[in-house]
Length: 353
Image 1 (tube, one colour):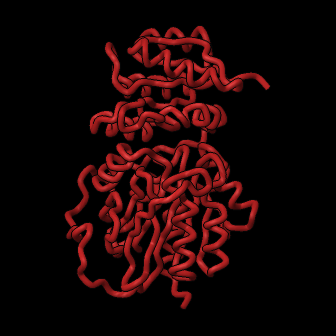
Image 2: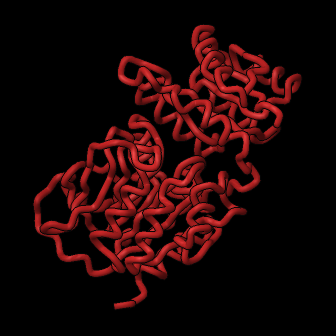
């Protein structure tokens, strides 16, 4: 099998060297070239025809977003964004993933010394990404109608869950998929829990981005927050799993612990907690992503009586997680990305009690 050919684009020579050393330690990957800015990268793409490109978010002469837009329009190829741990860097990275970047990693720092530990696996997943599966995100207002925001850790009483809770899991390609789905949710949607494999600086910016374009409120979940209709809770990319508790009322739980299915936060951890606490009063959705995280948890949800959906192969950037879930019988129905929001709406409003 031919090695995956990677082009590294970063204005820092030391960062390029660190990425090169990290990637070439994996025999399945070869670095075919490096570029210090987008103009050099443009010529390198023409000359080297790489399979995957790593792209710095902020560079001289042309920033990473501008360059990414040109690449995706003129010569699409899988791109992994490499971002600093700044608020601006995280916001630009989320924008880049909406524009078509397959995945992202944070640059190593004192807070994240092992940030590149997953880089080789992300490159290998990106090499198999289906760029033709990408869908244009529907135009949405930048500012949604104002809605009352419940205090994130408020202890006010909430009515028992009258409808169903929605639990969604995603990984590679999941930013664009979630924007497509959640931007179609109505303002008073069923309470929705989301786990996506993103580091914490990016999940915070992603929640803020979704809150601007979605009708429901979108929060980065906090421990103990009440789970209420009209709200979407995104797992923070910390060293904790997002789960559901139903002691007195539905609440978010951030549980520290070992990785589950290789991830923390884990989609499996979320889905298993929903299966235990809600049974048939839930809908599970598994979206594009590499690996198998979420498959066993979705199966547990289905066995507990929940309705389950999987993104179909044709619309997945990486048909990994939904494929495994489908193969083991966890998925009741497969649907294309642009139909999932309507499927969720039908399942959460239909009276099955």
